[in-house]
Structures are given as structure tokens and as C-alpha cells.
Image 1: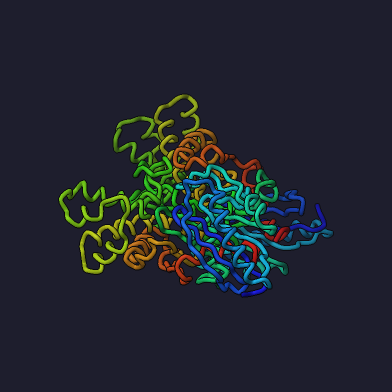
Image 2: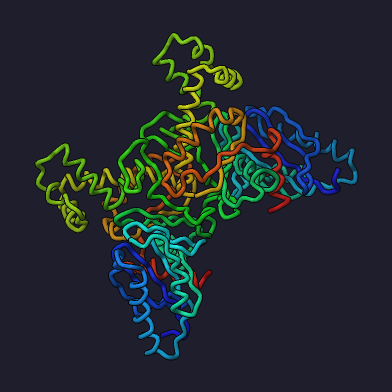
Amino acid sequence: MNKQVVLGIDIGGTNTVYGLIGQDGHVHHHEEIPTKGSSPVEGLIDRIEASINDILDQNSESELLGIGIGAPNGNHFSGMIQDPPNLSWGNVNVIDLFKDRFNCKVDLTNDANAAALGEKHYGIAKEMTDFVVITLGTGLGSGIFSGGRLLYGHDGFAGEMGHMPIEDDGRDCNCGNKGCLESYASASGIKKTIRTFLDDDPDDEFLNSINGDKVDGFLLDAEFDKGNDIARRIYEYTGNKLGQGLAQAATLLSPQAFIFYGGFSNAGNRILDPAKRSMDRHLINGHAGKIDLLRSGLPQGQAGILGAASLIWAP
Amino acid sequence: MNKQVVLGIDIGGTNTVYGLIGQDGHVHHHEEIPTKGSSPVEGLIDRIEASINDILDQNSESELLGIGIGAPNGNHFSGMIQDPPNLSWGNVNVIDLFKDRFNCKVDLTNDANAAALGEKHYGIAKEMTDFVVITLGTGLGSGIFSGGRLLYGHDGFAGEMGHMPIEDDGRDCNCGNKGCLESYASASGIKKTIRTFLDDDPDDEFLNSINGDKVDGFLLDAEFDKGNDIARRIYEYTGNKLGQGLAQAATLLSPQAFIFYGGFSNAGNRILDPAKRSMDRHLINGHAGKIDLLRSGLPQGQAGILGAASLIWAP
């Protein structure tokens, strides 16, 4: 193990990933544990602390230089995780909590920003100055690089692309608003789309088989690949809405690329092809055809911890 | 006159404003001349050159430090004005053309970015790091400051907020696309709204009186102030669409304020009040109620030349 390492932590609604990371981006002891977000945050910190202290004890020449954290609603400016969705923690000063346990520098950003930092420092965006990382999972998050820097906005809450309104008076979103991009282009959005399709076609066998609490992405992808027309229509509809949101963001930011990350991005070109067509259709001539839709090239789940670690390695 | 001055030029579709500007933002010899955009650009440069040389000859102790230019489709990276709307110039390397006449540094950006730079260095946004200046005229332009810096995007064409799609399959825009913000929230958008209202109410006297090539903003404002319900509905409809666009931009950028500039911004709260209500309705809770809609406090038409001059004074 390198002499100096940084602990990168990517806190998710279901699982938390952490690892000890060298300055070159080498990941040591990468682990994934359940977040247990209905229990107090201290329980999660206890488990991470025990595991990391074990590893550091076994590698006595190693030094923990700092801790970088990516978390839903993690605010870089305030150091707080603020009322995160799917976690019953309210407002938590996670920087102070980690500093109490580990005597080192601790920094925080939100999960999508961490993924964007990971792509910039260690992934596909190394040579890019202007790009947007979009995390596609239960929800939709985004981290924006512009002119070589992450955009935070005046309060640390820039990049809430999942809650960008794409339809006036559109679908109800979990945030309480209507017509947010996330309510169409995310796993929870696809659930809503399946229900809408069922309204028109209540007896369809395939639609009924995938209608439930959790969308089975593997099944949807497999059926798409077999030529199932409903699977095709689901991705076409979802990609069309996603492309509308991408066009809105691109018109403001003029990025080189959108980079997709997260479980639902495994659908790959099944969703990105219709999204690209829709984006280009919604863009003015100067932008259309010039912006790439790419998938993260980093090992599954590592962009988040690498980017979190870069908060310390490349502050 | 100050010893060192910068020539700030704001090229518009109809008129061009220029002035000699000291480092403190004092404007000397502010002039407005017709752009004559159907003639070659060299004619405009000839007229500016003659006028500025006269002034400099009369103030022999003065030194022209540089020239900053704001122009529609002016690209900071390429130094080109690229196929500007309402000007028959095609692609013009305006930096080289000015350097040939004046032996000094020349820099270029687009008109909305120049206005944003003017507000940042000399106007209402001095203390702000995150804000968006929106120019409301025949069209709608925007210049974005984020984290204290102007956003250019990877090709210099960030901030095309007028062409952000706010309606899927919406109104035809002059750019060839559909549903762009500008096709609702601008003088040309209001013209389209008046025609739509006339379709429902073809005999309305007031609507017929304002239906024409150019919307008379003074008349519309005067009728609004008298309680004319149609004038109220025009601003309510326009403000509602504008607010939708502001919400989209704010969700990505989390700015402190939107600052309005340009002829059509003289409507003031007649349009900004409904725009603010609509923006807040379309924002997630974390953002709603926190973003100010302000009007430029700089003398009419000066934000552009001040910002253009700041390209040299504060590069």
C-alpha cells in the first residue's frame, strides 16, 4: 500500500462504498456495505471506522492524509448532509462527525459532484474542461464541470438537473413539484412510465411482469435485445425526455460531453441513442451534433470514491 | 479625461454604442450610432475610427490602452462574430479588423456576456459571485457568472438561454427550432403572443392596435397601468413562460439573482412579478423564494460598453 492514502467514501441511499486511495488513483481495500439509512448516521461511521482502523493497523507504514465524502444532498460549503432523500438523518454535520473519529482533513460534496470529480481526475474526462456527469439510478443527479471547475452555485446546490422542469404541469415528482426530469428519466421515472403504458394496455403480459416496486433493468434490457416492442417504446419514451433535459442543460453550458454513471446507465445505447436524437432535435444548429453522450469508463461504483478522494488529493 | 482609457463597443442589431472608459468605470464620450448591419462591417469600423481618432487628437495626453467589444454571436475564443442575427456580415474576424486600425490589444465577447461583465465590475452585481444577466430586447440573451467567473462553455457558446427549449413541440422560433424561451419571452415573442390572442378574439380593438411589426412597449405598459385586462394577460402569459426558463437555469446554476437589461426590461415588475411567481412554482423547495429578479442599475445602454471595456481592464 502507498505510504499516504486518502479515504474516499460514497454514501448512497442503499449502499455505501469506501476505499483507501493513493494519489495515482489506485484503489486499496474497496468495500461496499449497507448504508442502513433508517438508523442514525453514527452507526455507519462506526462500521467504517472499525474497518479502516483494522486496515491501517495492518499497514503501519501507511498514513491517512484525509477523508473525502460524496453523499446525497452533501453540501461542500456548509459541510452538512442536508435532509437526504431515502435517509432518515435530517441535517448532519458529517465533517465534524468524521473529524471526531479521525484526526485528519475531511471534505464533503454531493454524490453526483463526486462522480464528476472522479471522471475529471481519474476517468474519461481527464482532458475535458466542460462536461456534465449524470448519475442515473433511482433518481437523476448531475455534477457540472465548466471551464475546468466544478460548479457549486452560490449555496452549493447547483447541478440539481434531476429537478429541472421539462414539462409545464407534468408528472408529479417525489420532490413535490411537477414535470421534473427525474420523474421521467430515472428508475423511478420508468416505473411511472410503465404505469402510464399499463393504463393504455392493462392486459399486456410483459408490462404486468415488470410493474412493481423495483424495475428490473436486466429484464428490460434482455427484452429490448430480443426485439420486444414495449421495451423499445419504454426506452424511446425515456430517452426522448432525457434528451429534452440534456438540450436544456447544453444550451446553457455548451459542454463537450454528458457522461452517464450509475445502475440505470447500464442500459447504454438502448437509452442513449434515443436521448441523443432527442437532444440534437431540441438544440440550436450551433450545438446540434457536437455533444457526445458517453458512459463512465471507471470500474462500476468507483467514480464516486475516486472523486471523493480527489477532494483531498486535488483540493 | 483619464490618461489611460479603453474603448468599449457594444454592437447591436440596430444601434451600436461606444465610449472611452477609465479604469474606475467613468464613461467619456458615450455615443450611439446606427449599426447599418446590411452594409459591410468595415463601414461601421470606419465611422468609429474617425470619431475616436478625433477625440484622442483633442486629448493628446490620453492613451488608448485597448478595445473591448460585445457583439451578437461574438465568440471570445475564436475572436469571430459568427453569422450574427439581423446583421448581414457572415463570419467576421472583428479582432483583426480593429487591430489593423488601432495598434492596441483587442478582445471580444458576446453582447449578453458584456452586459454581465458590466454588472460584475461596475453595476449591481459587484458583490455577487453567481448571477445571470438576461438581455430582453427583440430576442433574449444571457451571460452567466458562476463562482465569480463568466461561463463560456467549451466553444465559447454557453449561455444561449434564449434558445433553451421550454416547450416540447412548442412555438416556431426564428432559429429554426421549436419552443425556445425567446419565442415567448422577448419583444418578438410578445408579437407572437398578440397574434395567438387575436386568434381567440379577432375583433379586440386593443389587440389590433398593437398587432404589427414592432410591439410598442410604452403603449403596452401604459395600458397595463390603466388596468387593461389584455395588457395584463399578455404580461402574465409572458412572465409565466419566462419564469419557467428561469427555473430551468436556476436548477442547474443556483444563482443569487437574475438581472434584467435591455429595452423590454423597462416593463419592470409588470413582467418580473409574474415571472418570479412562475419561477418559484417551478423550483424545488431548496431554491424557491431565494433568488432575486433585479433590474440593471447602470445608466440605460451602458452595461454593454462597460463590460466590453472590462475585457481589457480586468482580463
